[in-house]
Length: 289
Image (cartoon, rainbow, N blue to C red; front, side, top):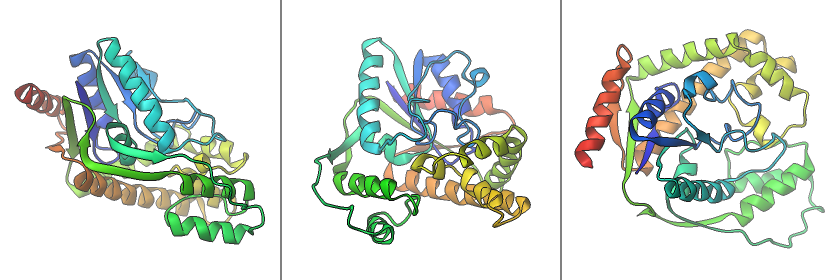
């Protein structure tokens, strides 16, 4: 059995994944693109040792911040991990926030990873960046790092995807979504940012601020806003407000993706008694099973 837990940030996906893992003798596979990287703990809301309660988590902390890692790489790693866990007789729970990752792992996405011989060295950084944003207008990349720009462009041009969006490659998959009213979610996101700051988000961002800008360090919400503060472009208060605003926007994009790209059974979260939500999800799984 494979259970996919979806939903926007701060809605309780991690907590639900632990409870279901205990119930169904399952291990957890991360599908958050930032939690792949070591040391990016607070910004990515990475599960803590206490939260994990001894449940094994996979595809977390497998890359350094300066190593490239794409959805193509994730697809290979996730499918290998599924095979490994199934051979051990374990059920599997996917939890995270990068919808494209879990789609690539479980659906019929195909990648063409052939190298091209284009000579990008002759292009300026501005020309490289223009080519990149024509392919992915929302991508985050260091405009001043030519080596990184070339590598990003090659990856984007070589990762050609063809897929049947409705074709699942695995049997007995349950898609569980958590949702709540927007006002409640946004309040939880704002409070979560405050907790992240209390737990050391500034120090974590400062650590990566002093290092080479990479796709990994420029992706997490929390770093790039604080980088602007360290560069004296904005005040600390403005940076914090921007983190909260961008987190709310990200939650909206996540919700839109999950609603449109997967056939998910949605549950309203009972934050006053989360056990009620857990029981509802278990009831649904066992009724379908």
